[in-house]
Image 1 (tube, one colour):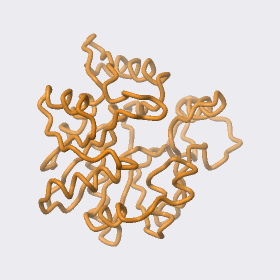
Image 2: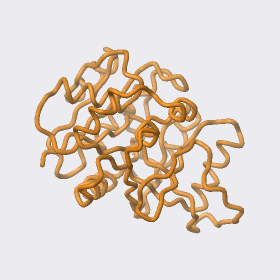
Image 3: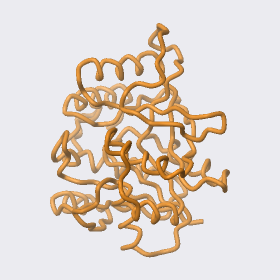
Image 4: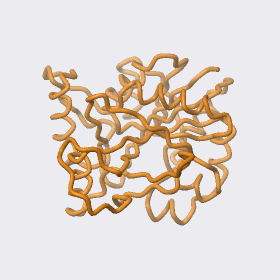
Length: 266
């Protein structure tokens, strides 16, 4: 049951142009690009048969090849990472059971997030798409709320039903809670981790659908599945003491570098 990880990366980001090539300093002072750190995260996952960077930009392709990554060139018309993964799959060929989309802005993604995600999809044969969710503690919830209060579009939150199928994803902080939480207190809010696992037929079908209203409003590619009535399994993952944050805005760079230092990650 071969597993392919695709790291979709584009240069022309609306919020942060050139983001994959942003340099991040680790705990030892070593400086690596965001795309390199995302590649390292993917390569640390056990049980994966192939890892590729999918991009439409020669600058990203050259940077990726410089540290030994396999690169698949894709078109400039891909609207999001899922479409880019679908095109990469078609370009590569091969008989993959599961394709993982590890978006190139999540260098802090622990290997077990992806392993648990793949295991969750395999354990639920009725599911065609899955994504990880992480229960927030008070400190993370407050960071999400602060981003929204200051007008930044930061992390995404998820709500799901008793069957763990997603009900909705939003860049607003949902569900609303009037509770007050200490830094280490568990909260009822789940941070969506920007990783997806697809079965090949579901990924190819996605690429043939036009974007939906909610997808365009929220700027969240996964909503295309929900708008088409395709269930998305939410797999809860555990932080195990590791910090997690995505690089969405320039203001996230010092936050991620601080987390790298705190974790002792080079």
